[in-house]
Amino acid sequence: MEIITSKNNPAVVAAAKLSDKKYRERTQTFAFEGIKLFMEAFSAGVRFSRVFATEDAYGKYGEALSALPVGVLSVVSDAVYEKLSFEHAPQGIFCVAEYFSVQPSEDASFVILLDGVADPGNFGAVLRSAEAF
Image (cartoon, rainbow, N blue to C red):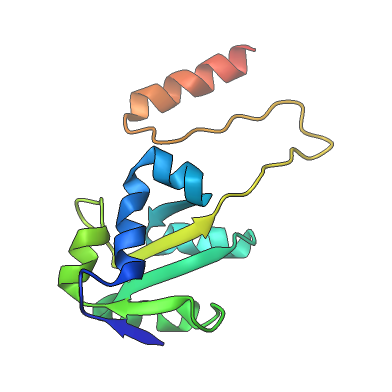
């Protein structure tokens, strides 16, 4: 497992650029944070390019993170994590994953994909609209 303490590390710089849509599209990768999202993505078979964890987060979630392939997980200093994180209260897990396509199941007649919904009211409006359709 790699330990990163420099904000100028190429992997950190590349991961920080994922806040830019054009960079995400060019690299076909995206970023997300948190242990819950990590666990859901891992169990769904999402392919991780890189996962960054603070020392504290690694101490808490090391067992779950140990399931990652060799070379994917890096422990980073708090200062490095601050450069990566876009959360107000981060959990210390920053994931970079490859784009994937969603294939609806044969029994699914309707699929909704949402990205970046910040207001719960907007999410509720989408659900009510979906139910109406």
